[in-house]
Image (cartoon, rainbow, N blue to C red; front, top):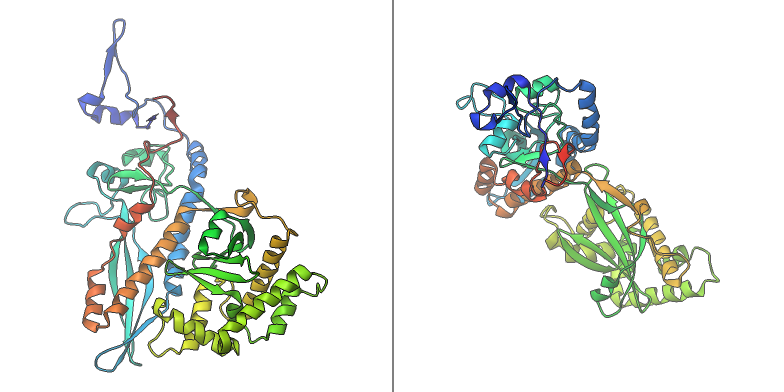
Length: 463
């Protein structure tokens, strides 16, 4: 446990409760001995305040990016939902214009509309702002009807652009009950100060050759060799991971996740679904003109030979897409009701396979998958070394604002899915009017245990 020095203006000492004004008698006089949360002396300079603010700037800027750009990107990336009503009409609905307000209280409860962090600490409340969106709905081809609804409360990071402390000077911070050197970067949830720490995650958009013993538990023929790539969408920073697994018989399977469910797919089916190509073209592209590499050519022949067991599935690109769409339709809730199997397969590839590449650039996805296959076979042959996942060169840092942005996208997508699953206009209107997602309850799962101090940089070790 650490004891922290909190800075309070000397004029505020006389206003403190008697229990906080500890006195000691010296030789002939009585002087005020400050408790750890009080000190006498001049306020720190603005320069010192800016110096400490630089330490938390990455967290604050990440949250500001969520407020100013990220949330709009999230809503823009969510497709419109469509369903057929009992009357035979077609209902479409989507989200527009998200907004997170600054923390406030109702005029009936306070003369001042602002909700300050000090009040939240004392009353055990969450320092958060209302999240609202415009819900647009349209029946058939009529003009859309737009209404704004409040979805819940989102915790606001201190010193961010929506925080009331954002542009306050040290003297102004003391006037509202904060420390003069308050630098922010954390949240107040139910009166407790909490933070989202930086997370080390695999480097984005880079295929890494990995040896992992857990891969052998995927099946009887699975080896510990694989090539993994973490793909990040530029629009909303959401990510998916795609892994190529090498099997002991020379074949390769693709592993990816859809709605938190893992699926395995023969890589040849995915290649045929991306582009209209023959087995000879696949063989030559992976071989890359290295005809003397018998290790690679033998395994490619086995790979293509085993794919023949799927029969008519691999006759053309459309049959491969229809094969994927038929089997994954049930786990793709965003599809319109009249979508064909081939269109469902295209939607699967666009949303969950190499998502950092533009959905229309299927040739680029095909080329990257060929590159990953070449690296996997070279890795198995010992031509290349495995990539050290613990090396800083293969890692990046995930900040709290980006993490919350991905979380909000997931919850907003679930929010729309609830109305789609209801298949009823009455239930649809009720769900949106009541706003069934209590965001602030779900967001608390991301926070670490309470921060022991409002400014963790000034502390006494050993206490």
